[in-house]
Amino acid sequence: MDKIAIGADHGGFELKEKLINHYKAQGIVLVDEGTYSEESCDYPDIADKMAADILSGNVDWGILICGTGIGISIAANRHKGIRAALLYDEFSAEMAHAHNNANVIVFGGRTMKFEDVVRRIDVFMKTKYEGGRHQRRLDKLDR
Ligand code: RB5
Image 1 (cartoon, rainbow, N blue to C red):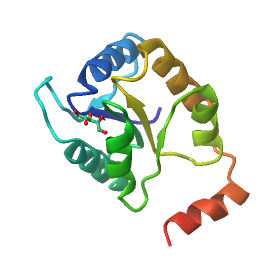
Image 2 (tube, protein in one colour):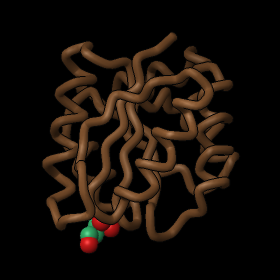
Image 3 (spheres, helix red, strand yellow):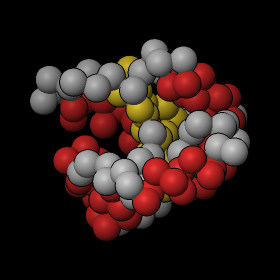
């Protein structure tokens, strides 16, 4: 089983807590990278922590959440080797794994419903990376 981390700023805190509890009930423990309250904080700090943990191999992949998912996506993607994908529907969830081999999936705590997010995570987890021509493209990202 992959080691999966989850992190959020204050805009994603509530959704993060719900997801931790949802997966805990299924026997899946998400590594909680903060934030730990609704107090205002800066999403780049959470994205940096997640990126460091993925790039060092401490965790396999992660889930990041801010208000819209936009700021924390931008922050995560500043790190070479991180492929953060904002999953806005189930098709994007499938493609983010099959084609982009995303190692971070991102959601908006103020723009997305919990049930939709869970479905997208489940699709992402069930999908396999296709490799082949997609690997050539991913290699170009890290040149
Ligand atoms: C915080 O208020 C908000 O700007 C942040 O959560 C995120 O939506 C940024 O993109």
